Length: 609
Image (tube, rainbow, N blue to C red; front, top):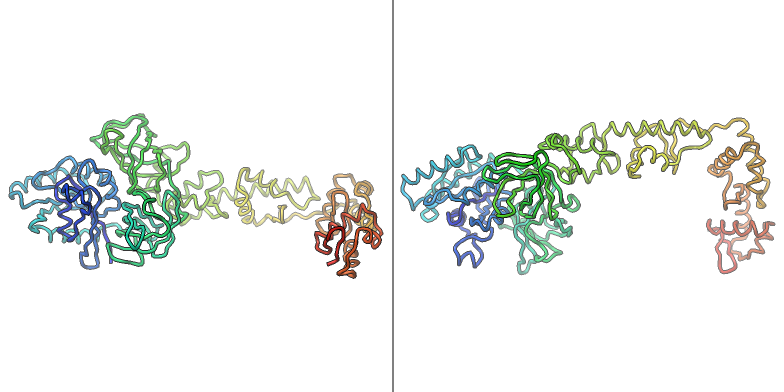
């Protein structure tokens, strides 16, 4: 069954609540004070099956000027607005403000409903129709149906229902594949169930037992149960009025304006760049000003700064930067209503272009981002960054996980431009080629040294992923080399290497002095030490300490000697007798055997394992 959200708008006492009650049979005034005073104070909700697989959820908003902030919370998610005008009074101040809000929110479909038609004659009703046609000219309601009704007699109700059914197919469907977003308009405790929140599911899906996150607090919660348009359900999809029974939180911890969504998908936003449309009835704006900002069901104070003008005249539009006093879940394309700080009246609307923008931006850049498809926006954001963007951050900035264009690629945890990656790889190859020329005896360049030259300040995981993309590069533990690089010894170097290895082999456990071996191998000290490192890397020699190096065959013979004494306990003196070495060699060798778990120290003794 397809669901639509129908919202009321209009001046106080023009019959919005009575109209919804006549349509649905549900009284949306649930508070004692509302019934006593005869006016709506809070949002009211109702539902109705329209037939042919169509279900409508109704959001009834208060019409008093003191409750415009409540009306704004209810206008979030409306598909079709019923602009309610009392036929006996015509257009009034809150008719105008509510209508401005609907236009600024980008609502595209609506019906003008002339209520209390039973109180006026045909001639007066025709005059009101003419006034309405002039009032809505040039707006989304130009040419919209104008239906005269009476909640008391039922006149026009069937015609209104027919118009709702007619408009429904033209509505733009909400994305059920995006991350879920449920702006909360009510939170309460229900006996036997616990915490319940309600709202219009703006996007995505919710299901029983699903884990969700409460933004901006970060609470991770479990969905215990769901209701859709007043009926129990196992899932809810975008566009439905939804009640969510939450486990893991008290209802007193939840406020109107918070949002339920996918865990880890988003982060609260404090700074946005947006396109502002100032109402013709508003006062001119200066470079900086404080405003009340309404987004979804949330409200906060924001400092607004004009980006492309020193001032803004009524009816004009401009790029603005909004710094929010509190973090909100906002995404590109979201619409916000701005109200003057004092006196509090609606002055305009803003469409979010970029969240968490760079410190400095240019209107041309914002124009390129505004309305761009996710793939095109990803291209701009990634290519302008120094080393690509973290994939999760890109998803947060766009509000979706975009299908990447061929000019971008995933590099580990980042998305980077192909041209950037190719440039970094070319620099790595050039750097390594120069290193190999200068150090022909080294197997490769230290990984961190190369990263400092190729990706200064870059994250190690990004550098590692970049190396993995280069088919000319070989990473071996902490060294990186060109795939074509091989250590090639000259004749004197080969002889020196052999002489060095032979000296340690012949020395046995009474290994010769390192300084002496290096001095007598036949090449200068720097090359001798490189040859020594090659032998150690190839496991021909084993470095036990800074001064003691043994040939691998010597240590293998020592292990064999101890293997024949398995289970035997011994002291340092006995070890010296078995091996014929002094304490200078015995202690480092025993510590090596302990590390290799050939022996185990027990007090002053050791045991052969």
